[in-house]
Image (tube, rainbow, N blue to C red):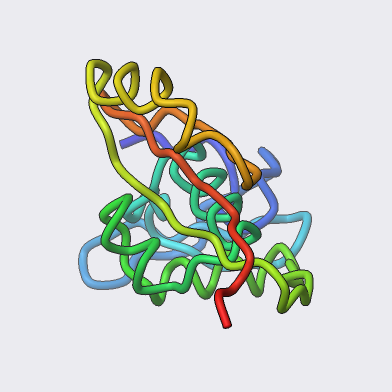
Length: 139
């Protein structure tokens, strides 16, 4: 396997630096980082990261987002910390969400009663649609 760049700084100035456990060891000349193989790891598509951050800003909890997009709540928490996202404090509104297929979404939108009295956003979620609606807390 050809090592093209440093997994830490992505620089291509690397040199061989011995063998460990029968694997070639490399040294990055830019950041002095030693590594043996490219860190491929498990990477989640940026689409899901963006959706998770959007849902968090809409007021959903980590566990709710986990159930919707199928990504661990710990990963979601780590993304929010790494992007330094702060949820706006607004106690007057509470988001509710529904997952609908295309025909259900059309029927929902046809009904004027479901559209009045609240803010709403519709976003694509795979082959379905998520409808997020803000309604005032009922006292």
